[in-house]
Length: 440
Image 1 (cartoon, rainbow, N blue to C red):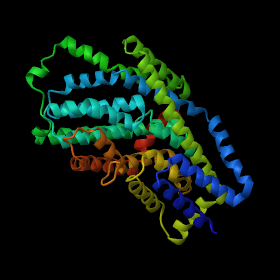
Image 2: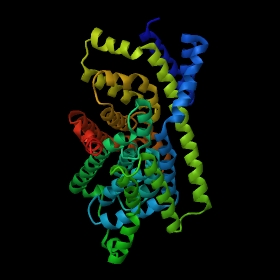
Image 3: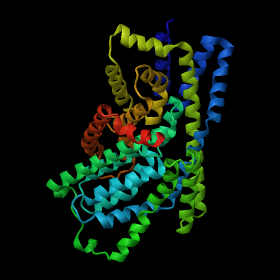
Image 4: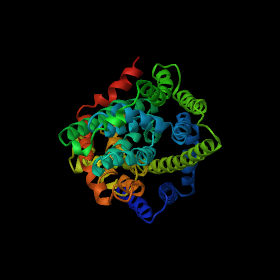
C-alpha cells in the first residue's frame, strides 16, 4: 500500500473514532499504536515510549501548568470582576461603551489565562447580564462576548500556541510574540466595528444614564487601580522575558507567583479558591499532556512513512498546485473541521501532515502558527455547528435563542476573516515583534 493510502486510512480511522464520541487523545493514540504495530511489528512499540521521553524532556512544557494556575487564581478570586467594574465606569458614557469595555476585558482575561473557554465563561457570567440589563441589543452583546473570548487562543500566554510549539518544534516565545500584534489588531477591529455601528444605531448600545455615570473621581481612580492589577501582573511576567532577563519558564513562574500574591494581598485567597485553582490546573495540564503525547506518536508514524513528502508531491507534481493554493486549501479544511471539533483537536489531528508540509512549501512556521490560530478562531464560531456557538448557548440566559447566537456572530466572523487576510498578505504583522526581540 502506498504512503498516501496509508495516510488516508489513518486519518479516516481517526475521524471515525472521534465521531463515535471517543476522547481526542484516545482516538489519535490508538490509531498511531495500531498503525505502528501493523507497519513495523513489535518494534513499533518504541514510538509511544520515544514520544513520552521527548515530552518529558521538553523544558518549556513547564509553562503550561504555571499559566493555567495563574489564570484560574485570577478568575476564581474575582479579580476579573474588578476589571469589568473599571470598564463600566470609564467607558459607559459613550454609545457602545460597555461593549467596547467588554472587548478590553476579554483581552486582559486572555492575557491572564490563555484559554478561550475561560474568557467565554467570564464574559457570559459577568458582562452579558450587565449589558442586557442596561438595554443593549441581545444580538450585539452575544456576538461581542463570543468574539472577545476567541482572543484567548491568540493573545499570550496562549495555551494553544504552547501545544503548536511542541508539535511544530518552534520556540514558544517567538510564537507568543507573533500573536501579540495580530491579537491586538483584531481586538482593535472589533472595537472599531462596535463604535461605528453604535454611532449610527445608538439603540444597539445606549450610553449609561447620568445617574449611573455620577461616580466620584476618587472612586473612579480606585476602580482604575483595581482594574489595572492584571496588567501589572502581565507586565511583571513579560517585561523580564522580552528583555532577556528571564527564561520563558522563569517568567511563567513569576506570573503564577505574582497572581497568587495579589489574591492574598486583596484578601481574595482562601481554601476554596486555592483548591479549585489547583484542581483545574491539574485536570487541564494532564489533558494537554495526553494530547501532546498522542500527537507526537501519530507524527512519528508519518515521519516513518515519508507521507509528507509523498503528499507534497501529489499536490505540486500531479495536481500542479502552487504553495499558496495548498495553504488556502489547508485553511479551508480548518473551517470545515471547526464545525465539530475544538481548536486543540484540530491541531493534533492535522499537525503531523500540515506543519511539515508548510515547512516543505517554504512558509515560516511561526507565521503559520498565527494563521492556524486565527483560522480556528473563525472555524469554531461559524454556523451551523461552530464549537463556540454551543458553549454560548449553554451559558446564555433563556431569552437568547440559538438563532440569535447564529446571527450575532456573523459580523464578527467577517472582521476576523479580514484580519486573517491581512496577516496572510503582510506576514510582517506577525513576525515583526519576534524578529525585533530575538534579533537583539
